[in-house]
Image 1 (cartoon, rainbow, N blue to C red):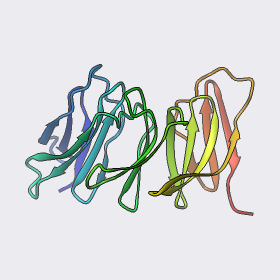
Image 2 (image 1 turned 180 degrees about the vertical axis):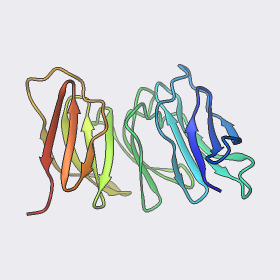
Image 3 (image 1 turned 60 degrees about the vertical axis):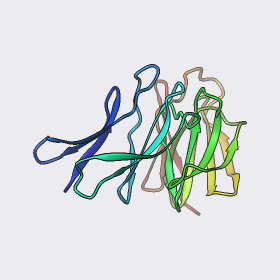
Image 4 (image 1 turned 180 degrees about the horizontal axis):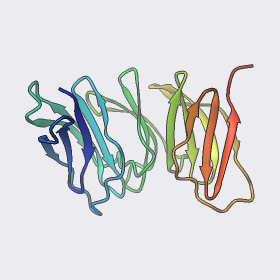
Length: 194
């Protein structure tokens, strides 16, 4: 059965796309009731995260989609707005304000921390060609090789030095081009291998 999985103010839910019927709901209560990230789904498991110490959790949807049970929860995985990527059984993202600030890698099935890179600020992420494109709120672009044993930046550059606008929009890679929105500006970079 196809379902839409999303966050409400206080829950992560699954809805039948044909009928609109609520299939399951699991509490995801956060201090500010600010749930802006899209949940991540893989093989019957859903990862949902919220910023401002809201934390991240994985729930398992049961076989008939009538309920979901919690697998793990970690307050330090409070991804604010920048999305989380899944590569080879590991989640990559950036934490916001709790004790877990920085770029993190955790085991998707267990929540076990593989590493945390505290030098990173809030990041907005996308993935293409097996790499993570990360955008800092200050407009720096990082190309990250997703490895569960270490944090590795392959390359980096700054969008502009003169813009004071925060870069919170998610980067997009499409047709060999990287699109970055920062304030009122849209930047386009050719990222094809030459």
